[in-house]
Length: 322
Image (cartoon, rainbow, N blue to C red):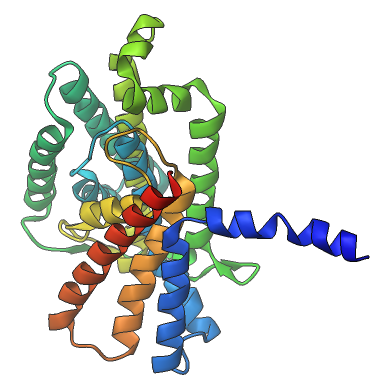
């Protein structure tokens, strides 16, 4: 019996040590807020955390893929905002709500393809190319709405935000579906192999006969698709088209990606760690809100904790030799 117990327990230690440092940071943060806020682990608040993280989670998956290619897409937040605007605008114009949603997501896929061409064909650094695209997309969203929010009432908004399956809100299931799809593409297809190749050794891809231009276009287009899905969920939550609702989300997505262990330089990492990174940011923001911390101090506190978390993560991984 002791031998059996030992056989079961032996692998546990290495598995726990192999967990990304962000997981332990998340546990510590949750414990701190549970002490300062007695009702923190109430079912309603836990459900609220999951819903709040769902849109950013999808956007962070997109950012993770771009970072794996040694790039950064600064236009993702603007793309999500654009989708909320296009979807509501097209629906108000009389276009079928589902067709309008499809056309809106197609728009961000096209934006992603343009980003991929600028990076691959134009040889423009991703940071610069997507920063320029961010401004273009933001301007389109602002011009479409004359700089203000546009509202539209439809049952689909309430359906997405209020429906629960197995006690879990629908936006969380959508995020889970996007995770499953992205995981399959990243780890079970040539598309994913090329992503890791672009970040790790693009010269080897060229020697192997891979068209790197197409690979870049595909990954940025898929990132645009995920940004579009993020925008649809966001539009359902706010029940309107808001041209600046996603402002700054691209940086939170980058932070979540780095916290999750994806490297900006080596093409190493994956989307599983990104989930913990997003949850860390969401738990932190939610905990500060329920603790009654003034909004004037929240961004500074979040910034300090995120920087500290990234430094700790890098130090731990260096010691472990990851």
